[in-house]
Amino acid sequence: MFGRSKPVSFERYAYTSRRRRSSWWPLPSWLTILLIGIALGAGGLWYAQEEYLPPRLSAAESERLQTQLATVEGERDQLRTELGQTKGRLQSSESEVKRLSGELEQARESIDALEKDIELFVVSLPDDPRARPIGIRSARFGSAGDGLDYRVLLTDDRNASGRFAGVMQLVVLGSFPGRSEERIELDPIEVAIDGYLHVRGRVPLPAGFAPRQVTILVFDRPGGRELGLRIYNVR
Image 1 (cartoon, rainbow, N blue to C red):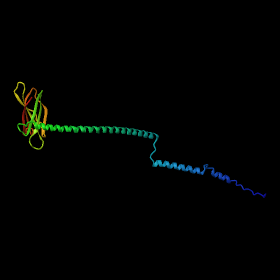
Image 2 (image 1 turned 60 degrees about the vertical axis):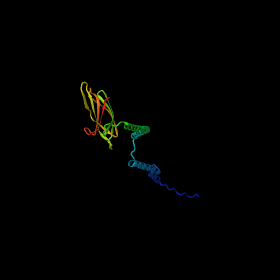
Image 3 (image 1 turned 120 degrees about the vertical axis):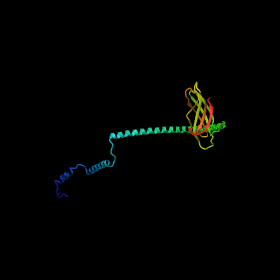
Image 4 (image 1 turned 90 degrees about the vertical axis):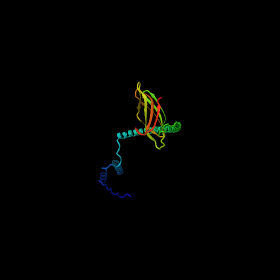
């Protein structure tokens, strides 16, 4: 129990050597590995952003982009408002078109009725006593100032198919003050008769000329074959 204790050997340089080996890197190994991982991750993220991802915007570019976005949204809202207004106007136009279509249909019905009345009136008029291919069924002339007002009703009595196209010419008999009677041939008037035709208008006369009588002539063309003739007094 109280035997001689053995001497303890003491290595003088062992602890000093371990301290020197570890003193040049003061961080623990686990922290070193963590920092290396963070650095590699950040590097990889930077590389991915630079090589594969879209370029990052600066603060000025981001603000400008937001301003443009706000402008586009404002224009979009304005276009939506205008679209709503346009739809409203379109609906109003459609209603107006329907109303006008109804009025047009009524006008057509009235015109058809009037045309039937006119046809009945034309049939009831006395025939042209000269019995020409183009009948001059009725006419009225009036003198006002230096002009001649005329209203002539022509009918196609040829018993032929197709519309008649020719000219009507007025030959006016009258006189100037203090002179004998003279005849004035007025310019031909183109006519196209589809059953019947009501021709009306006003033609100028020489100053001072007083018309008394008008001869109505109908030709198939200017200077061509005469197809109708009748004489009326000026009222």
